[in-house]
Image (cartoon, each protein chain N blue to C red):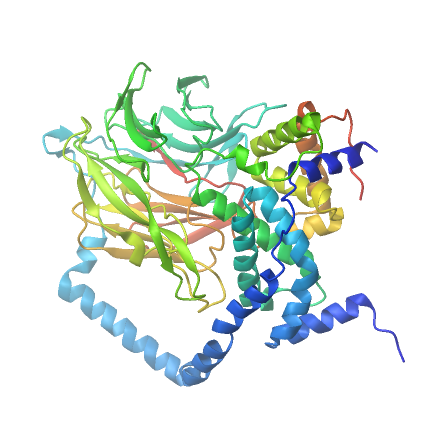
Amino acid sequence: MADETLRNNLDRAFDPGPGFPDRLLLSRTMAALRADFPSRRVARNRRFAFLLRPRVLALVAVVVAVAIVAASFAFGLRARLSPPPPTQVKHGKVIPRFHNGQIVLSGGTTLFAVDPDTGAQHPILSVQDDLGSLDLSDPVYSPDGTKLAYLRGPAGGIWILDTTTGLTRQLTTCNVVLCDRFSRSSWSPDGSHLAFSDSDQAGGSQLYVINADGGKRTQLTHFPRNQKATQPSWSPDGTLIAFSLLRSSGSITNPTYGQVIPYASDNVEAVRPDGSQLSVLLADMREQSRNSGPGYPQPVWSPDGSRIAYIVVPPSLSTNGSDFYYQVWLMDPDGSHRQKIFEDHNGCCGPGEGGMAWSPDGSRITVFVGGQGISTTTGTLWVMNADGSDQVSFGHFPSYSHPTWQPVP
Amino acid sequence: VTPVSADAEEQALIALAKSGDQGAYERLLEPATRSATRLAFAMLHDRSEAEDAFQESALRAWRRLRNLRDGSRFQPWFIGIVANQCREIRRGRWWDVVRLHDASVGQPVNESGWFEGEDLRRALLRLPYDQRVTILLHFHLDMPLSDVAIATGISLAGVKTRINRALKRLRPAMAVSEVRVNG
């Protein structure tokens, strides 16, 4: 009887009203399907069927390998892709040297640590939540590895875990209900401040800086409502904060289905910590990123400041049956020398459900790709060298947000 | 004449659809349309977005049809894809304040019923995604737990645990003191 009441309440709460769904929905769907599949796909497969012959495949592999090696030596790519060891002094400021500790991911009411070599995991913070809806996410280690900032959502604000004492405290609140996953905070190199994103009075999303001990926040950006600044990353020399600028702007026609859909053209931009000298590092990622919603470039500065890693999620256009590739690219801080170092063909469910982090010594990168397969609850953690080589993946982790890698003195 | 069971007919349609028969795929999709769009509306609170989610999911499922294991049923598998699609759309607008008032499209039965629904909507929105989907699949779409397990990609025990946790959180917003989870 009681569950009937719940069913009735749900029916009332989610009654879409009359005429739903549209009686032509199914026929419209089938028309869209016929417009693209399978004729083109079959034709394409037939045309290139000869490529699948073993001898042709072997020949192509040899040619590609020779070309890559030649290009590497000719243009010095090898040297550039292997980051130099972290420098001690850059632009007159000391960059601390740290070793690589554990990787931390979030999942529901738990933050858990993962051994980057074995994949073994254990919880480091678990929050009791009987009635509420707590959701810990977006953990970020302080530069000395002794503190861990994380979001306690929805609407719980930014909290800090002291990893030496195990105590937590709230640093700041959030203005909106969905101060939630993927906005990601960033520590200043000396650990004294934290950059983060939150909504302003007009409902836009802006960057702010706050003292790590609390106090008044300083607003850095003033974008209009349809441009959302988020995902800050403080440069190791402390002079710039790179961030994602998501811009909801107009609509385009999806090349696959012929639908007119909204899109967001994303930028990677940078601003000084005092809010001055706004600059564009990477403009309009619409060509690279998926075209049916906002992307999440998630720029992350390498520990030595020489490279910025960012995420690209292009549609696969059914070339292998999955929906999106999940890619990690590197670029110089001025937006030049872009290089793809990682691609996951199995990402299926959304560009935001994942992210990456550099190891504290800059030699490795970890990438979390969430929402794989039919399961909505797990993703894969990858660990690799900073040039994308020696990729190792670990299990299925119940997480949605990006990872963070603990610096160990 | 040997009667053809519903399961056998569905498996035959799936086999045809996998071989590229769009008519067979449409016949598979038809009975799933109402459930899929109801779930999408409950997740997105927007009629046009819900229909878009259905359409996108149908195209996505067609492309992935070969991933459907032999002997598996189509509808729970497809509903799982719809749930994923809705989550992706919600992620796409993660910075926006949830437009709760937009969810009030349906006609309230009476004033108290409306407030009850609003409270329930808010409570559901505060649930973690996985728990919210599980509640909607089982109680709103009336899917049996075994189908919910297929749609969410977890075990039957996992579904029961998830529902019990969700009900515990929902209880203050519900007009009932106890809800029993039935298989």
